Image (cartoon, rainbow, N blue to C red):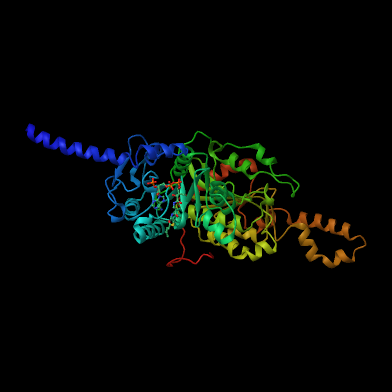
Length: 519
Ligand code: HXC
């Protein structure tokens, strides 16, 4: 018995030694260097992100079998993978370990990530990727490239089936950027993460531009200029808090209903301030976020893509505990006009919500599409069509509230009744027309204005007349294009009743392999 115990203890000691070796990653020196860069290690990140004691590691003992490395073998092969819980809900995750060969991705490293994704697809859980990697591992050559492609395939197949969230917490260079790009959300950490297809050195050679990594592909650039990143985090901890909050709004997979978080915020709470929020002067801006905060349970709004295409505001709220995706024109920026970036931003968000059974709320105050050669030459036609397509194909409950302007094609696009808006409301301040008064009278009364004794005065009179006739919601209401004109203060109660009504809505698109959204 004691001899048996000795043998077994020795085996257990060996296992413990191997696991401890795996936990040490690339060693103390490299861990210190990681901390000096204000970065947590791969394991510290996992510990923070997951609920206490919920992490179950997989493949901690995997390693490369490449001859090009000499004798140095790192257990885990530069990525920590496994499953655990966030706020009691299961997730599959991987966390790249920069202390091992710079977190570079190669055959075993890639295989580990694929295993995580395959499992997530079988059981229907989100995949969280904490990225911190020098890209394809040079020593393993084409196996590294193949491993990336294996991941890209799985990202694509998982898209719309389980939520995929990428957190960029270090370098993400070369083709490595394309895995996060296919996922649903990218969170970048300020000053310690960057993403680019080609780095500053290649850029300098090819285009003669001198740029730092931060200038070329840092968090601020990608959250404001390119729109690649959906969220910017102050540091690693902040990034993981964003992951937790984001997950709280979304279901585990496309077959699940949205999570409902009980609230003490009364469903019939009314807000008199909403009645006076929209300025009488149609040229005066206001902040659409004031309305969103007023409607939301406890004013809680998780804004997505906050710094990109700010003329459109998108994000998540809860109404009576149920997650809702909000898409709102922002009159405070460029009068809320629809342009290329706003259309792309909103279209992607609408499609995410529709894929994951999250009802949509549109708050509409839009003067139309942005005119000009810049927009036309860069494809406002194709890009505006993305938003139209996204709303039209969405089958989740869809509600619109027109707060002020709903002009021209933008009226159609922003989830109008005609493209299957389920319930379309307008405030008394709504103006639903083909175009604004000035543009309209200049077209239809061109001759009368030219022939008038005082053309300016004539034009002003016609503008006033036009506004009286068309600058209201009642013509649309007379056709049933809006279902009701409501007092702004009652909007929260009305929306909560409406979503409750629509919660068992069934709508379908015709059978197809897939649609051909204008990309
Ligand atoms: C193997 C790598 C590596 C890589 C870094 N390391 N990148 N090992 N393959 N791709 C190793 C380094 O040798 C070093 O090992 C450790 O990681 C840390 O790297 P440092 O350079 O010391 O760190 P730092 O100064 O912080 O610079 C980080 C870095 C730099 C910016 C990421 O290492 C770098 O430029 N790496 C190459 C990036 C790159 O070009 N990757 C390929 C992209 S193409 P030691 O032993 O000293 O700790 C690509 C194709 C994908 O990814 C295709 C998909 C379609």
